[in-house]
Image (cartoon, rainbow, N blue to C red; front, side, top):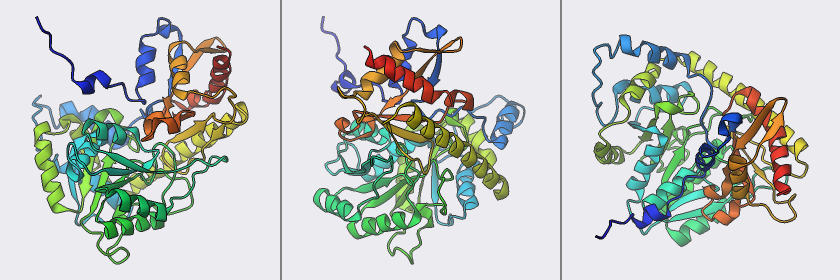
Length: 429
């Protein structure tokens, strides 16, 4: 009897680098004896925005008191769509001609975007700034969409080299991508792309007939003395032709501490793109109805409340990023540590301190499956993300790790010492 076979795609599929350590740790025999600090994925441990928490608690006794939870419309509930626009409004961004489609998390919006600008098995590539958020790389693989990149190099002091616009144009001319994806508050690098940089990228996209895709999931979280940076802050006067080529990726996960709601949004100023993205998403029926009900609490939230929340979040993450980066350099001399200007991540690079070379993926596996260090009476280990999954060419990230500021403040501040001890133990193997 002949048995069916897994597809080639499934046979070759490995877990995402942001989940790999967690899966490996789950099989560990002594896992119940170890306090695990999971910094591999942006799974925020803070309470949701108060209005969302209040809506969640009241939901069963108010809006869904009859116990009926139907599909919503594919485009999403009116309140959920208004919520994303209200958030943009609170930052002073133009929303009058924008269309919103609610999705199951920002990840679904990414996949919808790729289907809209490339389509499955496209011969034309999508363009990313390397390193790029791993889900863009992984979804491109899933859809057989080629990826081209413009490499961003980490300097020895932890800063990132500025974007070389001439290099961007050269790569675009040579490869004819359909779209350029930017993350102004960057995951994984923590680099901030100011408004003038976005506008220069926008000009390049207009001149070369590209879609400009901006992932703004971390928009309020920037720590430099600058103004909010967004594709929705680009005027037709500053960049003629910009209208109708912009696509934004939004998420309830990070700024609002609502990862598990799985609510995202794909926003565009192109009416036809919007209509066809909704057509495509009808196969999914709709996004999470309960998540939409909760997130919809932001539809009419006063802007002053939203902006106070932004400032609170910025202060929290800026403090923790500064502490982690400073103490990592002290605990592991010679370690390259990036200087985050935005988002909730930093990158560390071991390339200058390990004589025999350093394999970040192997080190992550060691921490998840064997590594542990004792502080006081408690054993700890770290779950981290190897950077090879964030580069189009995995060799580029071989010596690098991404660290997410997502655990409680107490655990975060133990991280530099724990990483140092784990690294020294690893060298003894």
